[in-house]
Amino acid sequence: MANQEQLKILISSVENWNKFREEKYDHELEIDLSSSDLSEIDLGKADFRLVNLQGANLSHANLKGANFYCANIEEANFSGADLNMSEFFNANLKKANLSGTNLNGANLIGADLSKANLSRANLIKAFLSDAYLIETNLTEANLTNANLARAKVEKTTFKDVNLKGGILYEATLIGVNLKGVNLEGANLEGANLEKANLSKAFLRKAHLREVNLCEANLSEANLSGANLTGAYLIGAILSEVDLRGSNLFMAILSFAELSKAKLCETYLNGTVLKGANLSDASIEFFQLKFVESLEDTTLPDGKKYDDNWNKKIKDSKIPNEYKKMWDIEYF
Image (tube, rainbow, N blue to C red):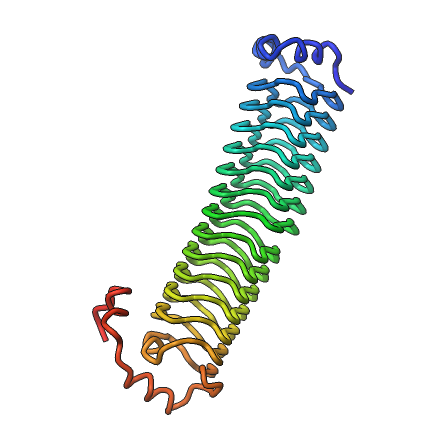
């Protein structure tokens, strides 16, 4: 239960509270506000560093610029609260209710948001790098330009999430369901998306350099203009995917499913397509000149790569506009 004397100071005014915290911060005084009712109170810029707020009710409170550095906020209720530019570095937010909150520009670096509810939260430009998002609910959350670099994501709900321009550099997203999610221009370089579901996802101009997409489902996804340099797509499902104008330089697509894929203007220099299925795919003969391996590959006509196909590819001419597009000076 909350320390009633400490609670009275906080409720009196943020100015009094912050003065009290400044005087006592270095005295190892335990601040206990657990299970307290702080709903609909103006607590903007309040100092909650290392405070125990477990199970507290902060719903619809004004917490703009508040500092929750390393605080214990497990199972607290923040629903509808304004947390614009607030500080949650390394905070414990397990099972916290943050639905409908304004976390615009908030710092959640290293925070534990396992099983937290962030549905409909505004996380535009929020910092979630190194955060734990295990079984977190992000339904309809707005993560435009948010930073999730190296975040640990597992069994998290991303239904109707907006991740446009998001930074997910080296994030762990194994088996995560990102079906239909907007990731336009997002940075997923070095991320682990093995066995993830990205079907119908919007990844136009996304940065996917050296990303692990082995056995991932990207069927009907839009990857036009994306950079997949050095990406791992072994056994990935890419049927009906839009890869027009994308860069697959040195990417590995061994045994990938690319039936009916749109590959016009795609750069395939050094790409490995061993055992891949390209049946009914939209691709020009000359593009296959650049491929590293076509061994046992099923080509657009449904037939395996053979001497006949090799001749067609060898005799094909590379259009000048394609050379200019990818700055090709040879062939």
